[in-house]
Length: 562
Ligand code: GLC
Ligand code: CA
Image 1 (cartoon, helix red, strand yellow):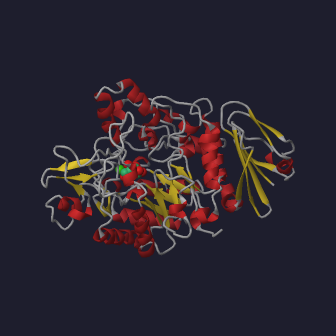
Image 2: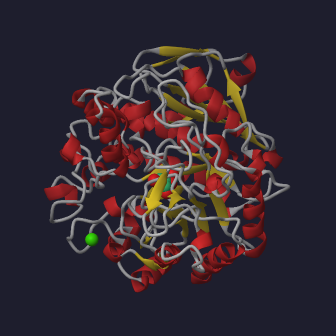
């Protein structure tokens, strides 16, 4: 296995808007991150991934870029960026930037130009089509709700936007657009950025005949996925970027909806080298009932084990993978996969155990290290996500869903759950800002915050630090083989990692009830000793694994090493 910095490191994802506000305007910013670099380093983190920081009118919080080579005004300046980057490098960490190249903002100069006339130089940088009478060109609905087409009155044609109407999609079949994009990415590489997370990257190519999508039962729009996702040309564009732009040691990560461990190799296979690994959506909907406001118990085998083991046991030539549960597009880890009430700390630590001992690169989402939870008491007016207002119009105002159920659904599934301000301490606005933040602070910041957990040896935070340290000490956790144990166990996820003679055994009880696991003689005879556990067993080193039947308490997690 080829050794790489981005395989051995632990990553930390920061939603910049919500991390730390340095100038008290209610919005997190680059100087806020600079202030907190020592904190981040103290977690044992090696790389920082930032959500988009480019100039943007913020229709979709920075995913609608109006200047790719400048910094969002609220976040700071290019000088702040340079200072942040050197602060990161001086601490021996790396920076991964979000790269949003599937679309721009409708306020980008290219789009403003493109709208002027059909023969404008930039017209063909975007995707246009004539309507059908009074209607859009076809029945595609955007990911955020509403039609995927918006009429430009001036030229009488519609432009395609698979996200919000303020995010017109680029036409990647246009060579000039591709050249401009390459120049732009090189600009950041020259600044010293170490890697990129390529937003919505498997959408770059579209079927430009724009055929109607199949109308599925209950759907308001036709299914456009077959025409906008994973088209063959995407591979040409990615190969071109690799050849012309990503020629150094940068890590190139894709965000690829609809891709799973069985087919990810089409992007990450070592023979094509398009992407180093991809973010998937495997864990996003776990526990979601039929309706957004309903929840079901996790099916450990189907929802977690099959997927995580699936990624971890791919052939080496199929590529690498990330290990993550949450990001800015889903809900809080402990609320979705653990228990954010009775077993808050235990379940958060169990999930951390799994994340830091599994195979792949761990991405810790800001706030998960202190066990931040969903914003369960948010009312409609507390939400900020663009998709909430679209959804409200489409479902509540049209009478399909009651207001009450809609809000209940948001409480459980909205992306804003994982975008609330970082909880630094128990003072005003959780220490995030002196003024009201752009999105409400989670009301539990008195009990869940960094300051409190730093002082408590048994906190989730200090447990994370032990895990990142262990991952540095044991190369087997990075490059070791992965073997699941007791696959049919419906309560406990357990596996062995091994490299050379070193063996590590991990057992995680996924539920708030007692459980047990049956080990084979071979495992018991491996000479395992307890190394770390989430109940804080005293005198760990002298506890040898001697019995085949291991009993576990609610959410108990243990790591044994031979
Ligand atoms: C990606 C981002 C998401 C954004 C969308 C449009 O899925 O992760 O936050 O809304 O792309 O850019
Ligand atoms: Ca600010």
